[in-house]
Image (cartoon, rainbow, N blue to C red; front, top):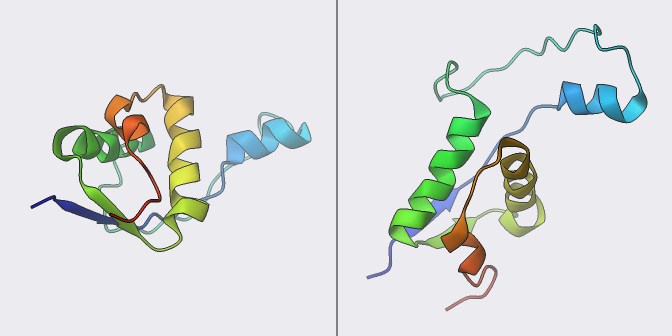
Length: 98
């Protein structure tokens, strides 16, 4: 039986990216109050890498809520920023029911 991976992400504003996009001062504070059920000391790069590692190891069927329209594009973008590789993920047929 093919494993299932059900996921949903929550995001916070990319303060650095916003400063770059609008030419705002680098010293502008990016303090944001964040609440999470995860580990607050674990970096975004590690979380995204773990997501794609699960896909690499298990090749699960992905289940999400608006994943194709929001969650996966965010994971793609943030994964690129952090240099995360995901060869098996990119080889999968995303968005096709089997």
